Image 1 (cartoon, rainbow, N blue to C red):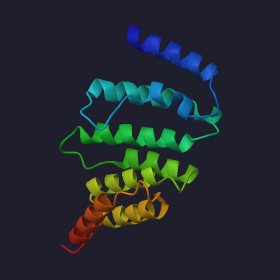
Image 2 (cartoon, rainbow, N blue to C red):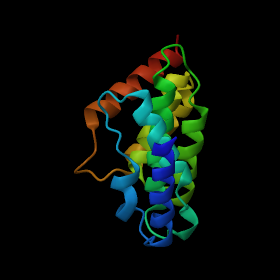
Image 3 (cartoon, rainbow, N blue to C red):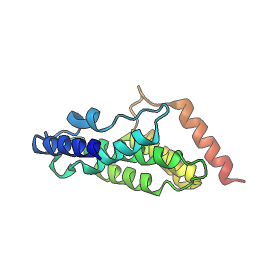
Image 4 (tube, rainbow, N blue to C red):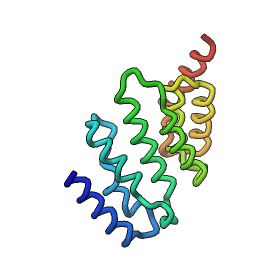
Length: 156
């Protein structure tokens, strides 16, 4: 309980001194990685993200939704029987509403649809990923593998 009170106090201070760019706060809010994360780390990150006041942020708020979506995705993926990624999908879709050109969000959204078994929606998201990707950062192999697998599963 004491930990959460300290976190709340820090978040309250952060909100009062909030800059207009989410990236200025991203590192302190999201400590998750693509490596193994404990459930405690995921829940702590989720708590911080949900407490964050996005109404005072003008720049890069789409990345807030990407971080929130990733956190919710990891939380769902921790349960090996889970195929419900609807909370993560909702967060990613909010990010896309803010910035439809964020290819990273499109990729993550496609992954969620894929693991949820909605291969048609996954294909659409991966196509948007390709459309909005900077050629220097486009993952041609990953894209081709996901497109091929989605099409194969749709034809089964």
